[in-house]
Image 1 (tube, rainbow, N blue to C red):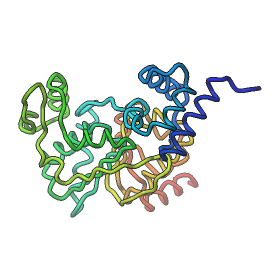
Image 2: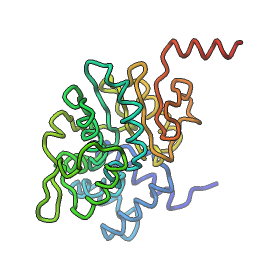
Image 3: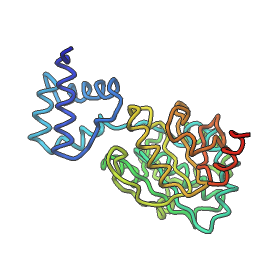
Length: 286
């Protein structure tokens, strides 16, 4: 059965982006990617996806704007407060036992999740011994994350989320409000490393104690989900923690046996130690 014109155009646009600029979106969920490309087509005033492809190939200046359409930029601070409460009350006691910590915020977008974790770790007295790796495929998003500036109208939601997450201080302690924006304290990112990283094609770059990658996997197809979870597994120390979004799960992953559900209702998993593997095998044969 022959492909539709739209399917061919989508493939060719993604191939153009990959071959010309080395951003690989081939493993992203097709319906979501088609929607995003259509929005980009309208934004750039192109009569077809083929016309968009021509501009991509010949006008490198549009690529930063294009990436804003193709990558996920929607988040909020302390999104799903019960997730951050679970980290605070159940995961942090384990993290305290390490002399130093590394945390990977994968797909950090404009930085809301990074600042949420930085504030939580400061409130729990862990910030001075923690390095945060904030990564994203989109360099424009990384610049926004590094700036730490958010519109004032978003702050009431952030504040309520922080309170419901078990916050020990006032969120206003961490930002300065001026000219319709809130600028978060530079000290919150003093131990953060911002870097481009593509879950489609890049390798693990550090051994970490916590990976927080929330609401990213839902935009990937099954093969790319498997690759990303495999990267997280490789990056985590034995007994390290993985946090996913509320609509994401390890249940259908080939890597599921390498994790246990630590706070499963909040999608927090723990990398299984060799001892736990042996115990599981013993139970299975009993």
